[in-house]
Length: 427
Image 1 (cartoon, rainbow, N blue to C red):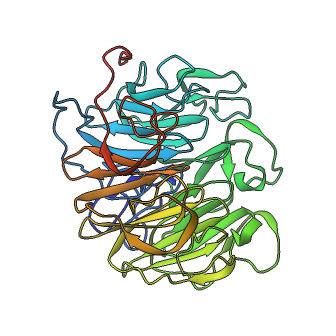
Image 2: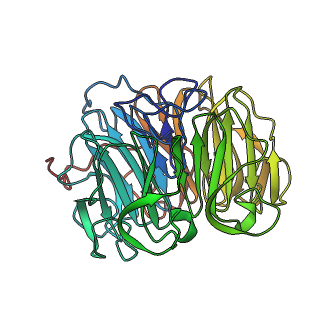
């Protein structure tokens, strides 16, 4: 669901040292997978990029021109987005009723606000009611709702400002799902916390208020979570675990398992992102393979039938894919973007909202310079080569970051600069 940024036009995931971005999606992981990239999807890459795309890793200092700029990664979820800045700060906008914007309040904001008391961030990952940041020292801070232990603090106390995840270090990438998180460590293993059921990858499937070992995998290159969990492994294959609702695990028979299941026929994977009970992977040849729920045409194959087998939707020159609630978008190597699926709020960027889904990918007019993409519930965003963010679609809670809450925008609009009224200090 998030927009993730990759280290190169080939990867959604950046090299070590940078940052990443749901649905959107940014590549996760300073550890490159086969094919040199990492996964996105509720995850964020470390190393100068965000979820779902290639990042602007050479962004300079912010310029005071009324826009949000010097952005190197972006991640989006239902109703809000967060952007990683070249300064190591994070700015968020949109729905904030759970404290997920990190500015110390529990209110929505129609233009970006800085996350309070946060500096040195190298990646950001968001999901519905909470957000997390990877810090340059390999630790993680989270903020927002904590009723299901999403923040990993050892308790269930909400926090509208960043708090440290307990007993967690040597992290190279993070992924936020509903309602749990996972971290990829430098030794290629996973730690997860929250209420993920079988998606946590633990034998007990209980809620864990602090990080615990997830699965027995020791060769993970990237991780994406969103109700189910998927890992790109060092050989370029993918294994997933959790619930098979909508064929999310690409299995014909319904199962719910905490043990990783290989996705049959999938290899050479560069990155992937997870939607709601579906997934799309970008291969080393820049084509895509998708599977799972297809009720709104999210698989992009011209139909609306759920599929437990891999679907090739015909896209080429793809460097990132980002999955939302009912729609998806793909970033192409030439900076253009294609979207498909639900379009009730104009989130496909086609210029016309429609209650009828669009089950085949179509180019977003006027978008030619994207380096990363991120999609939320009913909106979409791109990070441009100019380090600015543009969004379109639903804006009822300020998802577009333009200072108003108009119903929607059918074409991309530039996200405004951080509000001078609500600026959090760095620490």
